Length: 138
Image 1 (cartoon, rainbow, N blue to C red):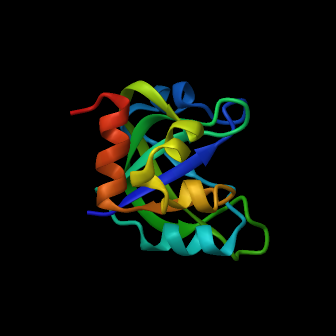
Image 2 (cartoon, one colour; image 1 turned 90 degrees about the horizontal axis):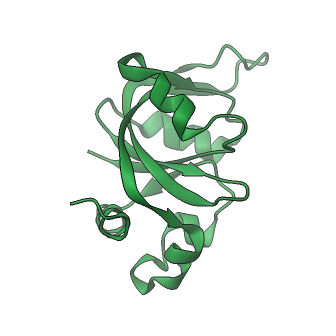
């Protein structure tokens, strides 16, 4: 299993909106960055990702599961980019902010800390475990 971080502006697509989609999930569409595209192409069914609110909040607020692998994104008129389908898996008991991550030496190499602009990022197993610990997840 691989781990990821998926960013969204909460006023565009929030964790609460994601949770309301239930077991059928929602396409993670609209990504228009080639590196993020490659990350989504590497995602497999069952992979987990942190759901991250960007914008003012800047925090991991939940966990999603990949339930549909990479496919064309119908919102991309040029047909270059694709999407994956994710469903909400669980809330994190305590949101983990970008500031929290930057302050933790164990996360100094995390993509979120080093290249925080990327909308879909890989997360190492050690980073996953540490962010889960920080959030209060067992």
